[in-house]
Every structure is written in C-alpha cells, then in structure tokens.
Image 1 (tube, rainbow, N blue to C red):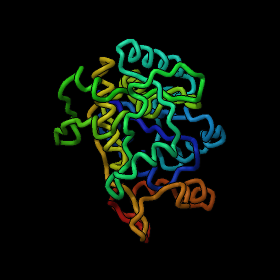
Image 2 (image 1 turned 90 degrees about the horizontal axis):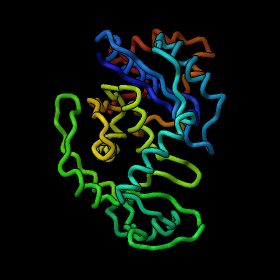
Image 3 (image 1 turned 90 degrees about the vertical axis):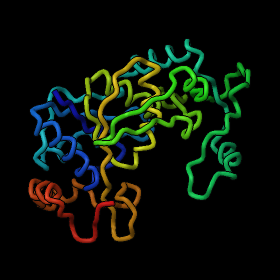
Length: 275
C-alpha cells in the first residue's frame, strides 16, 4: 500500500507552492487506495509557531485534502532522534564541531560561484572537550566507506547516491536536537512512508537521507521530486519572498477546491509557472 505524506514547517503560512506539493502527495496515495499523512516539522523551536499549525490544517481542508490518522509533531519525537544519534556515535561516525558560521563561510570562499558551501572538515580531527557551543557532524568519508555504493528510485530513474557532495553535514545542534536530514529520515521510516513527494529543491538532500537509511538499517522510500512553482522573476515561490499565502486567499473568499483543480490540470495563476 502506498503511504505518502506532507510535512510542512510551521515557520510561516503556506503558499501555492506548498499546495502543489501537498496535492501531488495526496493524490498519489488516494489514487492508489493508500494513506496520506500530515506531519508538522516543528523541531526548530526558535522559528516554529504553534498558531501556524491550525492554519496549515485549515489550508489543506480548504483545498479539499484530507489526511489519515493523527497529525505527528516532530517536537514529540525527540527521544527517537536522540536514539539515532546515539547509534551513529557508537559507530564512531559523529564528531563535535565548534566552527562558527563566519568561519565556515571564510573557509568556503574558494567554492564555485553559486555553489552551496561545503564544510571543510576543520573539527574532524580536533579533540576538544570544552563546553563551547557545538554541533554534531557526520564524518562523511568514514560513513560512506562503511556502506559502500548506494542508489534510490526517483520516479522512473535510478539515481546513484553521492553523499560526499554534501560534506560533513550537521545532524544536531545545541538549539535543535536533530537536523532536517536526521529527523525526516527517522520519521519517514517510523511512519511507514513508501513514497516521498517533495520539490526539486530538496533533491540534493536525498543523497544524505539515503546514506542515513543505510547506516540506521531503515527502508528507502520511492522518491518523486517535482518541479516548483515560480514567479515572473523566475524565483521559486517562498515565504521569504512574500509569496501570496493560502490563508489570505482563503480569507478573501477564493474557492480552494477550484484552485486545487486548476493545479491538477496544469493551470497556474497569472504570473506563475512551473520550473
């Protein structure tokens, strides 16, 4: 049975890009007689807002989408993430990193223009038992050597996994007990998610998720990375760019089910296009 999910972060209100992703995940499950789950990724306590959770559920209902079972909140799942971190530590795959953002940015000045900075591994061999603020990073080279070659299915394609391209990513910080990479991997397995539907902007993250699945003996879902909705300027819709929110549309009397039907038919509002 297909099990898909929609997993927004309550750090702001949803926009049409979120609606597009939720509809695709919902329909994939419903068309196959499967289950569609809603998970609230509120692990970032400094940015998540409880008031946005109800708005998310109201927006999905307005679009005509329904979910199965109880809504899962990542903030209730901290012991599961701690257990996964403990297991990786016992495997000798994690190390403390004390570098600041400024230090990492300075060390990454040689990266190609436009490329995401990759952590240079400054603290990998550092033995520092101080109480300074730190995070936990994975020793990517050691982890990859342990599991060997990996791949995942993305739509009809087989994608060779390339975790080293992400560098020694953070798996936990002092202000966030688990990173997105760790939490989403653990939760998808725990919820029995068989198919992950999400935007193409998260494609690169799947290299890391596939590695964590192998290290933690977790199943690998089938992935579907879809195109994104973008504005006239070519930039993808985003909260930080002031994309119109579903709540504002709903409150102004727009028919949400009609919006959903248009998106399913490939019709997007004026000024928007898919990338």
